[in-house]
Length: 438
Image 1 (cartoon, rainbow, N blue to C red):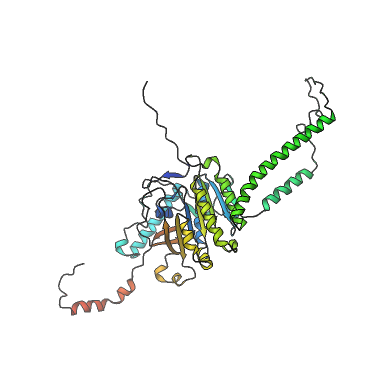
Image 2: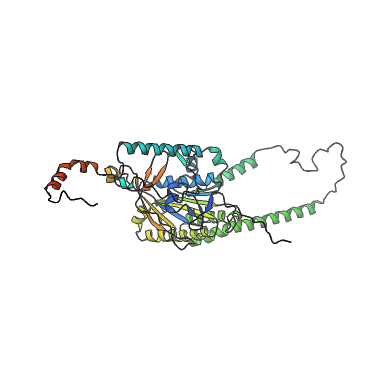
């Protein structure tokens, strides 16, 4: 008898990997450049807050990346919004690129950068050989590349496991109408639906005489069955409405309770239990805290909702992405901004140049806006990941959303306009012939 035991390696969850720097299970946010900025991906059980720009365009692009990555990785998706139509947002998800298309696109970008370098310096020469972002985390890729110009195949969306919430009661009305139409439409019962005593005899079989039940006993049996069905239906309805009643007691606005109840019901599934490596749930909430959520107790309900949402996401295999119009919330109550950032793990602000003076400024003509990192949390680690620089900018191109290091262009015109003044100053100096130390 030997002590040898075969080592069994448990397969990771689809679309996840273990980070070599923090030993955490991370998943891609859908955007490769954003993954590099936050340290390789979103840790399991984390909440990422994207603070929307004033026109709410760029944050929705990152939300589409997040959802598209979940569809490709065959993960569970929950999409909730009051401002957007969830079904329409899912139809407009970007199309994934194959590995060959990704390599061709990267080769084209390198060729364009080389052509621009031949014509002249695009940036300062000391930064010319530096990468756009830190690529040390790009060795083990878990994400995919997408094309924003094309939409995802409808068959991929058909087989995706999605749950949508928009606080509409249309679905229940449709179900009731369908049931009413089915019950009211006259249908002829088939042989399978007919009772055994009325069905025609099958040839070759002997029919045994059936005993007739007295009408009183038959009525009592039917009454007992009806009572049992009523009891079972009352028990199931009470269990469904019990959680909703408890949520309604916590929030003044019933929308928060309904949204949180749907999220918690989905996360209670056995495949998302913490410690099991079966599946991952992606929760995406767009435009949370918009004017459609306003009431007299807006701030109180929002803080309670984020607190309970963090507790739910932490206790299961899930990640959450939230987009919020923080500039509107700051106008409503400026004290809510630091409280909201305290209840999330990553707080990223998108400052768009659209409609501002920077849109026409020559120094910012290559970018669409600036990206500000307000919070980076350390989940189950001693040290938080920080990028090489926090001076980041983003570009919204036709096919993709890119985050790069922000740099100013070289001032070639001003330097070329003053060559004579510089030479005259050097010649007038008595120590002009001495060697200059740089």
